[in-house]
Image (cartoon, rainbow, N blue to C red; front, side, top):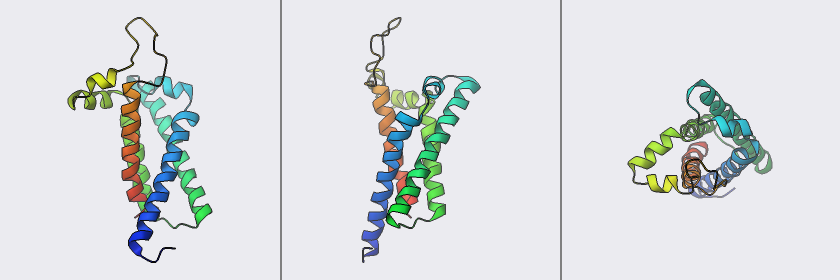
Length: 155
């Protein structure tokens, strides 16, 4: 353990952030089902439930990553801080993955054109890829909030 409490806190934050980032990548790209990915942005209860199911498995993956981090390093985390951090991560993940809120934010911050970048043209499926502006904004939103979540988890 580091002798300086500030250095120890910074190291804890760094370890937690890396664990949450790794969990994010796995949960968003491997754990999420095709149904969740296809439906989570749809209007109504079907979309809300698909998004909630994705956020539940996403959060479960983050918990598992923190359990492995603790088991592998002996790191001690405050359960309340972890609960707040994971709650922030879950709520902000749900907001972004419902699609409409993130599009609304992009439109009001001058990023609407970037949000639409790479979107297939109407009536065509000419860009079936992850390389869209919406995807880039979605991922940067998630990583930014993971930073905040890690701060709370590392308290």
